[in-house]
Amino acid sequence: MADIVHLDGIWTKFLELWPVEKVRAMTLEQYHTLNDPTCFQRCLESMTEKLGSIWGGSAFKFGIYQRASTEDKKSSGYIYGVKYAWQARLGDSPAIAFAAVKKHILSIINAVQHRNLNAVEDSVLWQMVAWKIAFLYQDRNDPQVLSVYTHDKLVAALDDVDREKLSMAELNRRLMARRNGKNLHEYSEEVWNMTPQSVFGNFSFYSYKKACGQKRTVRGSKNSRRLSNDTPAI
Image 1 (cartoon, rainbow, N blue to C red):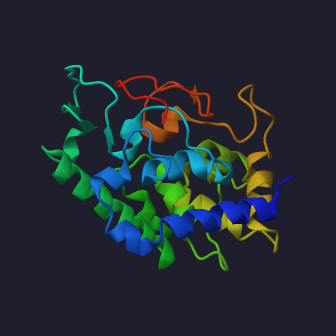
Image 2: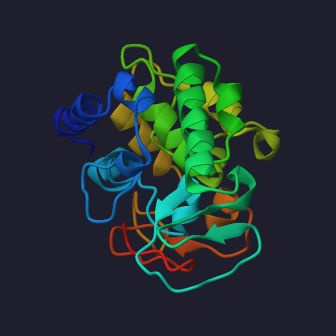
């Protein structure tokens, strides 16, 4: 059963460390620096893990990240610089790429705070990262987003005949409409557990296929290691 006080405490700590004003002024180094537990990426992935896990996969899910290796590397769709690696579509330099990422993060925050969940869908960040940000920056007194960032899990919790075709935004709207006054953390856990336990365990994995459009599924736990792109376990 969800420890509501503990989970609310984690949420409060995150917002104290990363208020919207700080996000607006965030630098690339603050977004991701290796071995810095207070950088934005680490806080999303590690510090707030109990508010829905986004572990696993590739660090390209964050758009840009600091590399652990200086090895020369090439891959279609990605740029590997000496210090940073990023999605090529974001620009031809770390500064330009980070500016694009930050713009998307602020757009997500603005969207959820104006109750425009459809706008959260349009992001260069992976789906699970975008919805984790939306969850953390929503109105805590009138929430709209569950701490479940997997399309498959939300679909499985809904019995509507058209559920497979619904967006993450619409899935959240329909499921939240059925919350019936339950605490958000408890309800999120209930939604996650509405299907049989996976071999990967509870609150510890996500669908890689849904997250980034590829065909393999990986475990998303704190013991995960990156699958590619020379990225360390953040």
